[in-house]
Length: 270
Length: 297
Image (cartoon, rainbow over all chains, first blue to last red; front, side, top):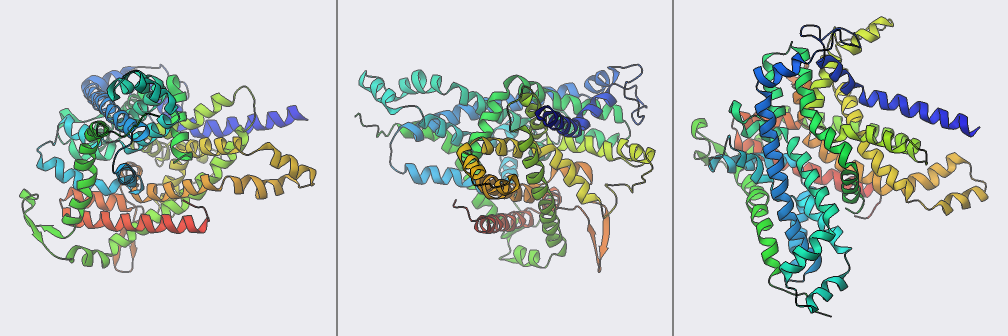
C-alpha cells in the first residue's frame, strides 16, 4: 500500500519536473543542433555541435557581454554586501538616536514596485553622464535594502553577551564588527552576496535602459538586440540563452543552501 | 551591562545611507517633481522641463491606453497569482515527506525561479512558435490544431502567464514547504482522534495555518504583476492588436511596457506620473488583500 502511494507521488513529481525543466532541456538540445536545423524535432542532435556557442561568443560578441555581466554582478554584489553588512551591524547590535525611524524608512522601500524607481533613477544617471558605464549599472543598486534586512535579522540572533564580553575586554566597535560579527554572520553574508549577484545578473530592464553602446551590453541586453536582428537563427539564440542561464545554474547547484536560506528568511520573517 | 549607545553607529550606516538617499530616497521625490513637468525639448530632455501643474495626471486619467495597460497587468496577476498558489501548494504537499530524492526535486523545481525572466521568455517564445515550434508540432502530431498561442487575442495573455507560473512556482513551493514543516503534528493527531477525514484536515488545519504565506504570495504577486515587463517584452511585445470601440489596443500591453515606451520616447514627466499611479494602485490592492485574508501585518 505504502509502496504504491510512494510510486504515485514519484510519478507525479517526475511529470511536473519534466514540465518545469522542459524549456531548458529543449534550449540545450536546440543549441547543439547544426545551424539552420533549429526547428527540427530531433531529440539527439545529429551530429551534436558546439559551433553555435563558438559563433555566439566570438562572431556575435557574447564573450564581451558575458564579461560585462560578470563585472557588473561581481562588483555590484561585493559593494552592496559590504554596505549592507556594516549598516546591519549598527541596526542589530548598537543603540543610537533615530534608530527605529531610520530602519523603518529604509524598509519602506520594500513595499514599492521596482518599476517606480526606473524613471527618476534613469534621469539621475543621465544627468551624471553615466550612460554606458559600469557605474550606471552598479551604483544605483548599492543600497540593497532586502539584503540589509536579512543581515539585521540574522545578527540579532548573535547573543548580546558575546558583544558585551568583547567590549569589557576593551574591543571597540570596529574590532567587534570585524572580529566577532562578520565571522559569525559568514553564512548570511554569503547569502546576501549571492542574491545580489543573481539580482544584477538578471537586472535586464535597467541594463537595457542605461547600456546603449554595444560594448556595454550585458548578456540579456545582447540577447534582446540579437533576436531583433536575427529572429530566425534559433540555434544561436538558444546558445546565447544557455550562456546567460549557465552561471546562475552552476552557482545555485553548488551554493543551494545559501539561496534557499536567504529566500525563506526573507519571506517568512519579513 | 555595557552601554551599546554610540554615535559611532552612524559611521557604519552612513555609506549605506548615502547611496540609499541618492538612488532610492531622492528618486522618489524627484519622480514626484518630474510628474508635474513636461519635457519641451526632446534633444535636451533633462534641462528643458516645464512646470505643467496636474496636466500629466489629468491626461493620465483620460488615457484609455494607460487604463487598459493597468487592466492587462491586473489580468496577468489574476491569472498568475491563483495559478502559482495552486501549483506551489500541490508541489509542496507532494514534497512534504521524507524520502531520499526530496532535495533533488526541490532543486529542480526551484532553479527556474532564479533565472532571468527575459531569457526564459525568449526560450518560451521559441517553444510557442507557430507553426514550427515544438508545442504546436507535438500537438499537431496527436491531432490537435492550435492557433498561434502568442499571437491570438484569446490565448496570448494565458500563454505568457502559464510560462511564467512554471518558471516561478518553485518560490511558492519553497515557502509552502517550510510552512507545512512548521505546522505542529499534534494538530493532525488531535483531528484524527476526533475522526476528522483528511479533506477536513486540509481545509481546517493545513490551509488556515498557511494563510500568512498565501497573503505574502498575493501581495508580492500583485507588486510583481504591476512591475511585469521583461516577460511581455520578450514574448509578445504587447501584441496581438485588438480593436475595442474606437481604440486599437495590445492584448498583452501591460503597464510595465507602457511605462517603458513612454520612457523610451523621453516623456519623462508622463512616465513619472504613470509610476506614481502604479505605486498607489499597488499599495491599495495590497492593503485590501491583507484585509480580505484577515492577517495582521
